[in-house]
Structures are given as structure tokens and as C-alpha cells.
Image (tube, rainbow, N blue to C red; front, side):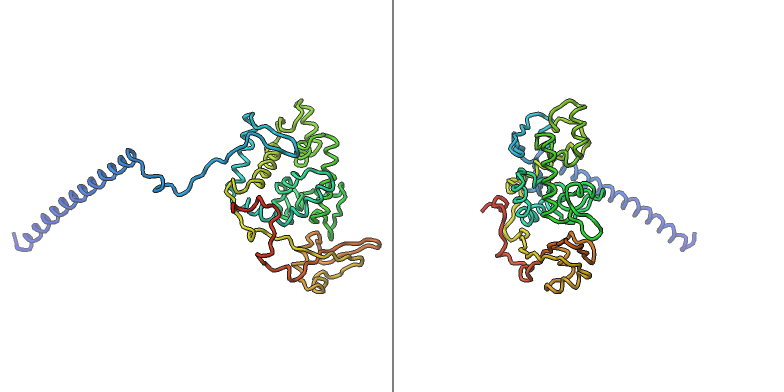
Length: 340
């Protein structure tokens, strides 16, 4: 055997030995690590770590009252289905943190407008929470069914209750006039039902649907009806919203006065002649077109045609009131503030 062949044989044996011992080494290391991992897991099972170590945050089910009040009527939540329906909505709103915070902030701007109109029309104050559920207090809200504004009127229903709706003017987006129209609806429905709970439910489902369901299912309250999910949840969403608005700190919402959206005072300019260019009109009052539409979302075109004998009032804010000043923000309801 030549020298070169001997060298090759030695190298083969060396490589085999290295492979054999190397593989054995890695197997032993793997077994060692696995045994330590199992021991660690067993130790964690036998001795749970401290709560402060592994709990980043707790998600607790919110407290549910034994009863709630809506428009002066007490609704006892002792029946399983009633309690669970209310529980669902309370937990939903509580843990939709950003959305619910936005409701509270917007309410500071819109409730001072809505509440006096409800009171003037002898409508229970609790109906302002229906408005929250309907539109999220988004003045420009438009549903997939084309229901519009804070009170989410369909065009046909809005016209039925006295709103002007056309290509240039849509009073569903007019806060005061839409609230007046909603009050007219509530009065009409209360004449039929004599129950504010049924009135509120009919705002979602329609008076025809609620009346026929009460008759066919032979019950006296909407809360006892088998309805589509949206309407079945509707009343409990309103009641849960009221519960949260009256006790936000209890449900984890902590706000300071400076967090709320301020109500901006405006002057009303009476218009009795056609405005051909609303952008040019806005400049006359030291505004721009965007801000004019912000404070008058019922203006739906670039112009406003005023027929003989007709007038409109356009809201114009003062320029100095358009700028944020935390020291000027007034909180509409002291209960919305965090614990002092």
C-alpha cells in the first residue's frame, strides 16, 4: 500500500471518529437541555409564579346592578336573559375604550344642545343616550341604509316629521331641527304605546314592526319580544350607555376637563337671499369653506338657493373661539370627571 493510500485511510477513520463522537456529544447536550426544560415546567406547575410577575393586565367582568332606570321606569335585572343582555352591552362598551372615550368627549359638545330641546318637548332626558347609540354622536354619520345625522333619520321619515331634505339642504344634519323632529316622533310613538321603552325600541325597528310583534307574540313589553338581534340589543345598549355615562370612573374611564370637546358659541346669520358661492360667503366672516360646513353640516352643496319668503340661519363661530384653550373648557356633567 502506497503512502498516499495510507494517508487516505487514516483520514477516513479520523472523520468517522469525529462524526461518531460529535453526534454523541450533541445528543447528550440535547438530552441535558430537555431534562432541564421538563424540570422547569414541572417546577412552574408545582409552584406558580407570583401574580405580579406574569400578569400584565387584568380583564374583569364589570359589575352589573340589580336594576336600572329608564325614563322613570325601573327595570329589574333578576331574570337571566335580561341580566345577560345588559351584561353583554356593559362589557362591550367598557372594553371599547377608545370609542367610549370619544362618546364622552363628544357628549360635552352636543348634550348641552340636545337636553333643552328634549325638556321643552316633555321627552325624558334619557333619550339623549338613544342619540349616542344611533350615531356615536357623529354629526356626519351616514348608515349603509342612508340614515343620516345624529338621530339617523331616513329621508322619508325625516320629511314625515318636518325636515327639509333636498340636494342643497338636508336638515337631518341640523342638530337642533333634527332633535325637534325626533321629539315629534317620540310623542307620536308614545301616544300609541304609552311606554317609553317601547317608544325607544320602535325608533330602531319601526312602529309597525313593534306593534305587530307585540300582538302576535301576545306580550305587553318590547323587552319580552323575540326580535332580530339589532333590535333585541337596542334597548339594552341604551340602558348600558346611560349606566356608563352616569358612572364612567367606576368602569375605568378617567378624564380631565381638558380632555373634553368644548361647545363652541356661534352667532346666527339670517339669510334671505340666494348664496351662489358658499366658499366666498365664508370668507366674508373670516372663515373658510371647510369650517363653514363644519358648523353647518346641513348645507349639502356649494351654494344655497333661497326661495322667496324663505330664510335660513347659518351658524358662524368667532375666530378666537376656534382655538383650543384648556382653561376655557367647561365640563357639562361633573360625574364625567375622574376622581379628584
